[in-house]
Image (cartoon, rainbow, N blue to C red; front, side, top):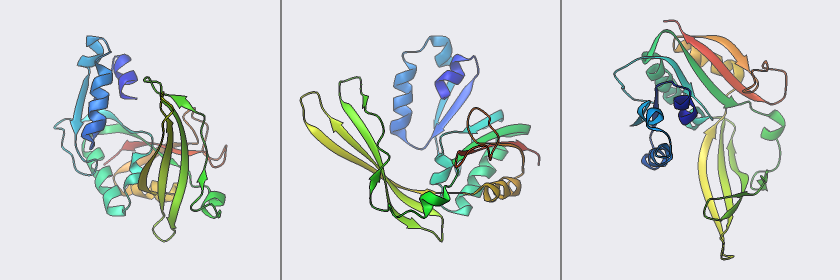
Length: 214
């Protein structure tokens, strides 16, 4: 999302805690024209506690990193930092998975599910990704998840890689309360990135457009 934004002629600051992911972004930027590169600033920082010494008209938290904040204190800390970095009336776009009640009550814990279509890496590796919910913490609304990558190398060697992490799910009105507590006014809630209204599909996504009002 950062590079297409810069291609569109907009200056953008990208923030990530991972030095590795920032390096990946830097490498991709090298293939872009100089005017695109000049619009991008990359910062290594924690989304719960950062200071950029500037304010913005728009902040986006795309592709659900907010759900890796597993406590209300962490969620509020992140939203407070965002609010502090927005101009008055500036906008925040924030998206989550919309929790699927049938999925939350299914008996698939420990099973690998949702095999995705195979894709190829530039070096010829073929990759298939699957998902597994290892455990569910219903009281704290946290799923302990594994992303499992089955990799076939060009020489035929096979490899299984696992990325494990906790992910907190939020329901619509819970998220709205967090935003209001943090000085935002919710302007719209969408079910997908095509701006279909929330409730038009199930489970769909939870995509908030909120304005800084305090």
